[in-house]
Length: 553
Image 1 (cartoon, rainbow, N blue to C red):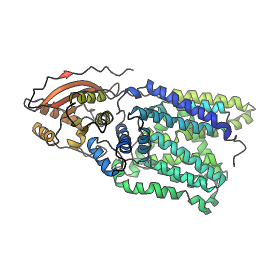
Image 2: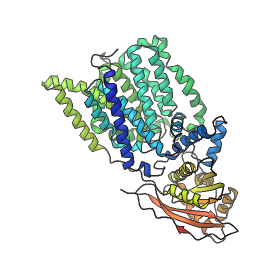
Image 3: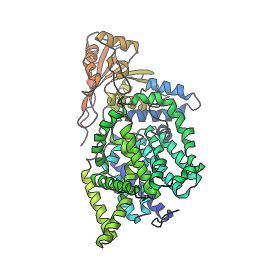
Image 4: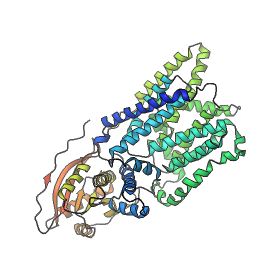
């Protein structure tokens, strides 16, 4: 049952859909402007893993449906060792894999990112539009979707946008259950929560929403209803088995800090990051509103369902990033990005109505002035737009493919840092159709050293040029791709040894190509391509490939 302040849902559906479509088109235009469709994969260490795993699912559905999926995944990883299934849940890869079926191109994944932003915008516009004039709702949410923080994530092939979408939808389903008490909304909350968890494990934060929301509404009698507990069933049947099966794998991706150690580092990090993500004005408004709300609980003031659920989602998201030692990144705050905007509008409306009544001002004029001031200050406090400028890796693989047309079983070893290796593996995976020839891309970080998933406990496996050449013979490598790893990467120390082994007379290797590569506008290097010499023909001398200019500003 809606509150008197809410307009009918049907009155906002069409404008919300239009806002979502507009956000999709604007996001696509910004993706083009800021380099998504002209860059290689590798702007983030995890990006190639998400893209290659999505491609693996697509190739299984298109070429191997009915075969043993685990065997297919093992074979795929042996060829393209950037498959992340197990470290991350499967739902994003299933969605992205199906999305890739019509076009086996990573550019399709950028459109998927834009579509998910459009759905987030449409949902939030419909929500806010029931409380404020619809044109104002469209303007507020569209402006919010253009913030650099969100648009940076649209340039990265990641699962964060999908998990944010499922978290928002699950919160709204629980809000409907609090209002209606209908079983279908409790089950919907459970199903959407399971979908969010199967997209990213951090979505277990949704388990805190029912308890926190009942605390804020004071509606404890819902605990006595069987239908309230029905929400647990989809999570237990769908998400929990995967979590139990993959727990030993996902544990490798943790930082190794104790919860107390993590908390000590997380508090200052997110204390500085949250105002950058939300903007200082909205952060201040929400902190003040939360203090007022908490104080109100002690005197018996209860929240309405929508406010209670969104406050629960915000606090649950913050609890997970502060307590679970999974590293530090602003991406983990994305599930609260649109709910924070909605809460800012809801709490801001209450504040401006109170202020207007006290000072006998027009509520509409005051609300408009506050929205403009918050918007201007938020944009002013945001960093500039992120430019995706990864280049040279895809061109290098295409050059190798052109020089190896007669080789039906091509084996390559890429030596770089995590981003460079990922870019090369992704280039090979997307550029080598699965039925044309067998291509295997090996990673130097796995073959030349031993280290865990997080790059810790690095130990080199080769100590001399002879051991390097021996390893290349054992692995039957046809091409060596020797990049310039970032200075902080452990493989940086092995690059001189690799060059010494390959460049020495009689090594059996020839430098065929060398060209510049870029991981960003400021971070570049030289990629050297060595081919194993053949006995029936002398290898031509090294020639530079078509020079690559620095990425455009």
